[in-house]
Image (cartoon, rainbow, N blue to C red; front, side, top):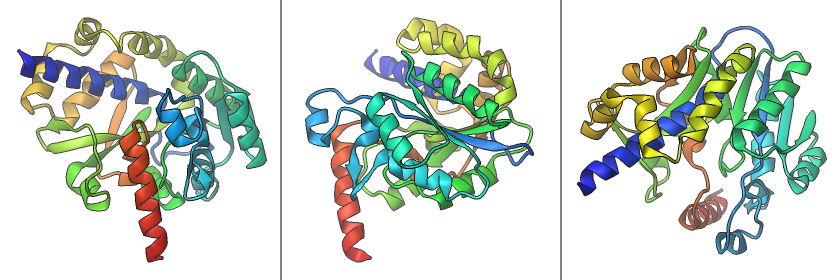
Length: 287
């Protein structure tokens, strides 16, 4: 019974992550591409004391805030145009200092922040958006460029997958949550590409999925028994997941395999933070 509960929990967590990614579509299609940088994530005690700030995006690794690292990665990516940050006043002050195109006061949920920033991007004329988390300590323009180049044209939402072997090769010993698919263990990136023209159509379904994320019965009903059994047994394929999530959201969804590992290393726990600081220090000594 405990194993079944673990499988169910994994199913729900994966489904939630996939559903949240629907705000993104990339692909190598045409149209102006902008960047949405949600910076509203908070750290609770005692992690905020360890991090030195309760706003995740303002935590410093190797002398730079995580927000600064994310903005630099976008600004140095040739394909990305306007950058919009949504977050609390402290994060917005940092964003303005770093020269983003727009800084928007946060709403009450993560999806709401993304939607607000995405609408602002549309005012700049953007048709697509890279949605990039602001708690990725080692993301670079090279990572973003490689991810964008791999996003298939025509998908209305694209999300990256990182294999366990590749992740552990770059970040040995880093704790992570893995999903066992038929093709192997993977985790999802915190970078997505989305067709902004589909946002309003997708919005209601996205919000419903986000609202269901903390209820295993509701998530089970949403993703379906076949997906749950597939995740639990390790028989789920990427292709089935793409179709199922696309059906839930009412759009075309593409998984991007072999995405850069740095896009999947986000800071959520004290061990994540301590690993990032240790890794940065070691890398600094070797350069």
